[in-house]
Image 1: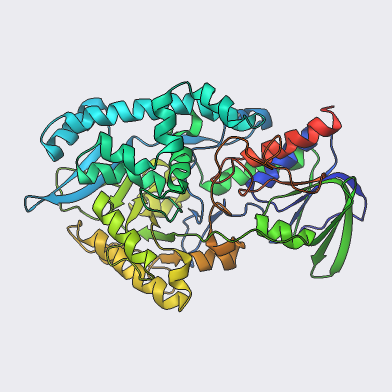
Image 2 (image 1 turned 90 degrees about the vertical axis):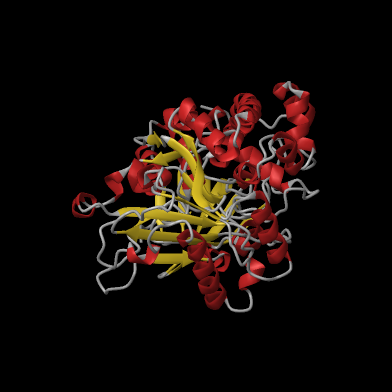
Length: 523
């Protein structure tokens, strides 16, 4: 536990030391504000941490959040972060079987290789040309929309004018994304690869009229103005460690082992009651920034919580003694696993998995995607493991909503893990189990987390990795100027549940800090 100083009044008290709270703390402290960060755990980072989950094994895995796309370079520059990202040379590989033979689609490694891979799979270049046109369109949208994330919320009409492309606007903001996928592509596998970006942590059908899948898709293709997903060097904890260092260096007090239990405010001043193993204390503040879910905010302020939005993912971390060989011998496993390795994610398979889960049954062929961090960044492995050819694998399963685990979390998690790995094994030339490393106690280096596990470990309502449904990146009724405002004038929401939150971005933290500085003057 890192102790907070004796009771005093701060310009800002930040509840929660996850990456967004640390971004806000660093900005405010650098602007000369007195800042106290209260973190209930004995470490900062929230879901963006690196840990050694396997007993006696020197491998630091990004245990929960694991890739970076939405973090603006502006935040890294503004805060002077000692933090690096690496680009994956391969975007994705999707194995399948056609005409009784193993094959697949490799995207990346240069335009020629990608074009040839599409032609081998589909028999012509038509799908590749459609792929180029479709992602040229999302790229144009990304270049226009991404810079607005760290600005005051635009109106819907203003954002539409910024996009300046009526077809793109209709495709992404008005029609279910399934319409565009089916219009632009004919191959079932290609359609599925495109759709997956609409389903990460989001339980929806391609044609869901709520368009929650569109919002998910939008955030997955606009990151950095390019949509590229990058690997954090040193693991995700390297980012939050750099943020904590920046906040402390600027003068913020970061107190771990301090759980906020109540916020009292009259709109001008506030008091945050927090608890440690030694008892309770109170910190006074002009502003309180809550880096937690809207449900946690409501509990702290005594307000009515919003309806919960369940999570829908199975997260699996693994350490291997070697990468498994593939049935498709035309692809090197070091390339196939370097990008996103799609499993059971054909368009029809995704629809089937959704229908089964919506009916309350675990998918029999669970869709998932895998990537190997250590191929791009071996620094997360100890020297001995790296020299022996060990590798990490991160698996993210789709269409596994929290409701499925309610009857028996452990049993359903094990059932889905078994089914998921069986889908992977169908494309391997050797069982994955033969490649798994073992820990110091002789147990396989594999851990799985359901939405209910994430709710327990990280206090994510329903295990939702976005805290609630993702929002459109424009103003709506009640969203406020920055999308972080609450009904209490001096209490702001700076976690993933803010407008334009979700993912590892730091955007809500930045925007909450800007809202405070606008109110109080930047100097």
